[in-house]
Image (cartoon, rainbow, N blue to C red; front, side):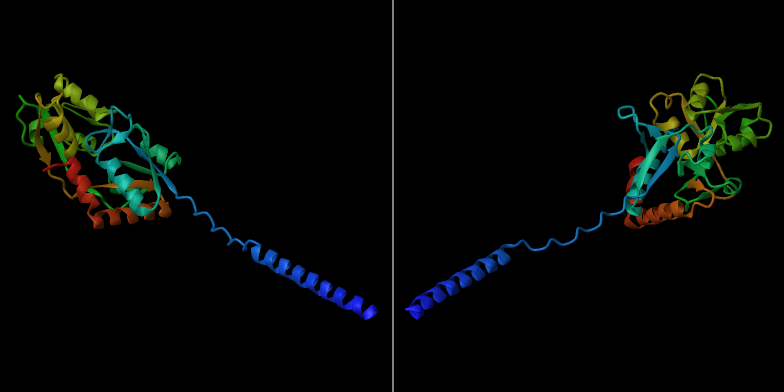
Length: 271
């Protein structure tokens, strides 16, 4: 009798044991797989703040609709940033004091048609050149002038502390040289007869004398001043700021190599 009772109990226990094992295996199979470790977030891109005096058309100027800086310079800066792997922010900054702001660390670079000169190299570093300029002389259409000698006894205007201003000061026998905070103010005085000539970068001189609807009917691009040596524009950075300089030069080289530079040039200087 005891054996008859034990056998069924053993079979029942074995069945329960196997069932329990099966349920455990199902639970193990149903357990979610371990999730892979999340990839580290990419490091944020470096932001370079560029100061730009946006009163220098068509190189740098203010868009009336957006109130943002536009022109050849801003387009080039944005293309360089994209190619160089950094973010660019352009701040409209008055020319008077723009170099002091760089020295004080208010921004990391200047994109404002800054000519590379030996004097400036003493206090700041420059990128590789990105544009060649000459100085243009703008006069009223009724004035005849073909050389600097024709500016003797004349009143000449230029934006203060620019290459045009330095050139005006070298004119022998000039009656007076007036410095302006903005080249547009000098052009206005020229159109109104308070100046005899204005000297500025050739691209800016041509813009006012040839394409600006407010001045092209009254002003003329008289001639270009032949420089003793080529004059180039560059992006200025603080002295010794190799990191920023390398990023700008890397982007500039890439933009030139890709043909993007030529597209930007053609946009603003149609032949």
